[in-house]
Length: 493
Image 1: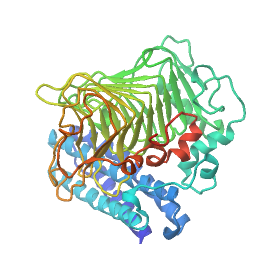
Image 2: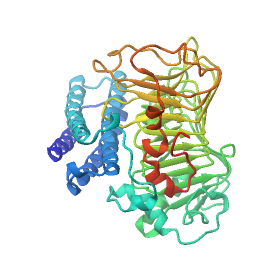
Image 3: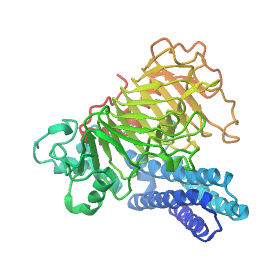
C-alpha cells in the first residue's frame, strides 16, 4: 500500500510537469513554471528516496531513525509541491496566461500532493509515538553508522570515516572534522588573488570534481562584498564555504517579489545540495520593502549547518524551506517574517534582531508554513536572544498546521505582551487547522506569559513537551551533528 501510494504521487507529479511544459504560459508566469520544474524534480527525488527506504525494510520493523528519514523525505516532498503551487499562484496574479491551463496544472499538482500526504499519513500511522517525535536509541555516531539509512544520511558518517589526518586547520577552524580542517580546495577572492573571483564559478569546480575528490569540497571566500546570486544545487553535496567573518565576507543581492521574482527565486544564496556547511559569512538581500519579500538565504539542504553567519534583509531574511537544518551563533535581522518556511529548523545561541516594525504592524519573528499535521517540521529557538525595535510577535501561522517554539531564550521587551498572532481554529488553511505555538522557561522583559494569546494553538509547554524540540531529538542531532564537529546542545539542559 505504501509503495503504491508513493508511485501514485510520482506519476501525478510527472503528469503535472508534462502539462506545464506544453501549456500556454506568458513570460510573467514563466518564473513560476521554472520554480515548479525545479521543485517538482526535488519532490520526485524525495519520493524515490522514500520508496527505496520502504523497499529496504518491512514497514512494521522500521527503525526510529529510518522512520525520521522517511518522514523528513515525505514532508519535504509536500513542502516542494506546496511551494510550487504558491509560485504559480503568485505569478498568475500578474499574468495574462490562459487561466484554464493554469487551473488544470494546479489540479494535477493537487492530486499528486494528496497522494504524497496520504503516504505520509500511512507511515505515521505505523510509527507516530509521542505526537510525532522520536526518541532515538542511539547515543553516538558509531551507533548511527550501524543502521542502514538513506544514502544522504551517510554523508557526515563518510566525512568521519575519511578523517585521517589533523590537517592544517587554518581559518576553517576546529569546528570541522580533520578531513575538512585543511587547506581549502579553492579560494575565492574578489581582487583576483584566489582561484576564482566569484563563488558561483568556484562551485562549478565542486560539480566537476564529483566523487573522485572524496570527502568535502571546501571553499574559502576572502574578505569582500560579493554581489551575485548563488545556488548550491542538488548535485553539490558536502560543500563547505567559510569566510573571514560575517563583517568581512558579504554576499549580497537585490532580487525581490516586488521586482518580479517569486519568493522562492528571490534568494541571494540558495542551498539545495545535502550536508552543506557555512561559517563566517553574511548573507543579505537589499531589495524588498515592508510588503515585498526579498530572501537573503534559502535552505532546503538536509543535514545542513550554519555557524557564525549573519542573515539579513527587510522581509523574509531566512527561508528555512525544507529538511533538517541547524544554526549556531547566527544573527537573523529583519522586520517581517525573519524565519519563514517548513523545515526542521533548530537555532541555538543565536540572535534574532528586529530592525523596526512595519508601519502600523507588528514585526513577526517566525512564520511556519507547515501544512500537514503529520510533518515533523517546526521552527525551534533554543537559548536564543530576541532584541530590537518593536512591537514584535514571536510567530504567526503561515500554514494550516504551523509549529514554532521558543525555549529557554532571552526575550526582550521588543516582543508584545500578546506574544503570538491570535488565530482562531480554521482561519488558516481551512478547516482542521492545527497550529502549535509553544514557550518554555524563557527570561527577559518580554518573556512573561500572563498576557499571551489564549486560544487552542498556544501552549505553555511542560519540560516533557519542550525537550522534543531540542536538537538531539528534534533534528536527530545525536545521529549526525556529532559527526560535523560543531558544538551543540543535544538536550534542554
